Image (cartoon, rainbow, N blue to C red; front, side, top):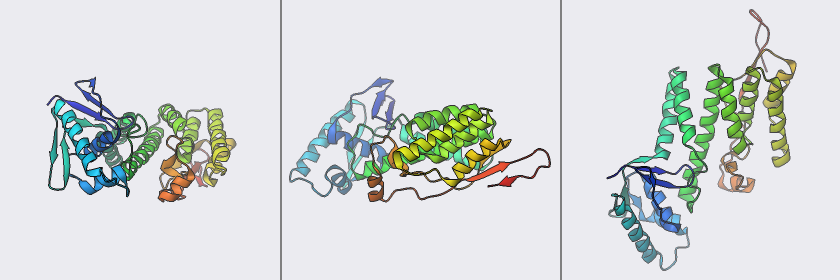
Length: 303
């Protein structure tokens, strides 16, 4: 089988030896994405029905599914892959690489490296994961509840990976790299208070106090203008510390700040009502702000 590369972190792509391969459309594409995410495990018939038709499967559902599977089997055979039918479902042995799997593996490896104190490896792994994320997962795939839920899990993991990577870069004395990462991220995710806080710290650490103040003002504009909420007290405390000119300002390890409407603001296409109905809103949590004041024997104060 010639080497395949399957990409789901953004619009679906399938490449064979670097060449883009045409992908089936509509419900066949949905079925293909489900099979790919099962990674050689059996995709059960009931799961397929739920994803394709919900609770309103038409009388022709069984015949339609046979047609979808037939089209997919021909497509797979042309790539040297095999669609295998089991007792109550199907599996797709396609081989090659899957970016969603590489993404999650890199994040897990980065967190393990961070846990053992290997900051350089943690940054490398998290940065590689972040680079794989092109856009909202399976952007051009019709999604039922299974694929939508999986896409949201990938989105949340990407958000966390970006913020963890930025925090590690600041700790490593590379605030400029953290700034570049966070500016790009916040252009797509403007409601992430933790990311704004990290950007303020990164700007302050690089000596650009004006940029740190501008970051706070931009965060306030998004939160108040779009969501009609105030920034968290800790974000305001961070701003006040920067205005006072405290010589060292950083975000300590600990719980993260609230993320308004959590994963539903990846492209602006979801609403607060969507988040409430799905029960996936992030709860209000907090990061610890630690302001170190004074030199030498100066005593740190925490706010």
